[in-house]
Length: 316
Image (cartoon, rainbow, N blue to C red; front, side, top):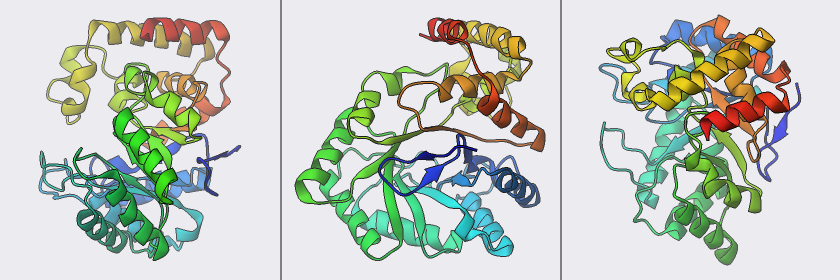
């Protein structure tokens, strides 16, 4: 499996990053262990999680994804085989404000390290921006964490183009750590957030890019063909924004492309992202071992220029 460098770091990723948001949410601990065993066996060793993941599960205050992942790494003795990504800055309370002040991030990192049962994180992300903490202060906190050996590299997710640019300039001008990887929402049904301004900044500054919601919370798998399939679903809060006339047209073309290659729609959707400029690797989750077949399909399939153009046109 060919791996790609993440930005200017010495970290390398397989073509797809495994999304740990399902750990402790739609997968319980036993199911999570089984899934993690399988993805590592297949060579997908980069795992993306966050301190707030699993917060959506009833009665879970957050941190469950990290806790289960940490327990698995310790019991299997595989920490040195994993490229571990986690994030901080989002509120642990549903609907609470983001906070990327130094005091908050320093404590959030310590809490993540305890749950993950490790003494270092390979790639730590600013998860959400509070849009008020000076970017220099946030980067100074990361400088301390890197100096202490608790974080190796840093990245950012959900920053505006302006705040990302300001952060990169602050790094250059003040000898502060640089965001090496950016994590935008990007898929066939959501292209503008990345393509409008962010992609050019990432390319110019040689940032790695790992996209989240690459399958639009499962919408692009073709499982949800009608609005009624979404209403009342445990993923409704994520899926409801995708249920538009345009999105269902995208699904139709995606189904045709997948049929041409005898692969799943998920495999075709991931294959499309893999060929897009500026993308290092999409993030994708799985709740059944059979879903991992789409990972293999995406890596192996060769979409034609005509098929890429069809998908580009319907999703533009």
